[in-house]
Image (cartoon, rainbow, N blue to C red; front, side):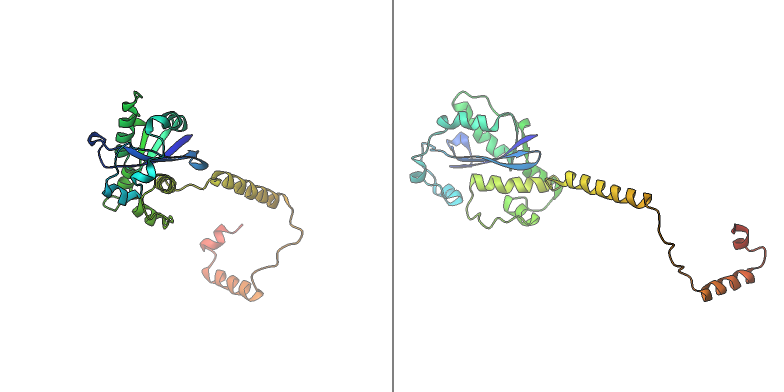
Length: 231
């Protein structure tokens, strides 16, 4: 099963106000394991960068001016995500921007049904607790010290780890390890059962303990339950 963990950075909060995507980062998962295959692209928004947005992600107008506009990266982006499920933190925000960009160039929208929102997953699992990406990294012990500013690829890589924890934590070879362990134990048990004992085990009761036990039984009389149950 292929999934894509995705994040975007933008010039603002609402595409209806003319804000655009300036960075896309995506990480491929296969069977809930990162494959090392990633997509990362800076994008020229063809507009100025508001100071408040630049403080969040550090991407200024001068830095972005030499990168391609969204129209030129559509094909590569759509090829990378294919028809895979998209794992996104606060999916409504990123999908709103992505679909605004796609609509601008005559491309069909990405339906909400294709996304898994990790923000919703976190709020259901930890109601009332902080559910930001940083808060979830702290909760799960994921190292996010390199996250001085928001960055689409770094955030996607962190979110991939958070997502795997949210769905229960995954050890890539867990099933395989358990299978081998069970086989080893079964083999050992089989060998133990089939191997005849070469020497009798030494008695664990001393002669004094045997005598004391016999005297105790004698005191119980002939009708004692112990006597009736002895062979």
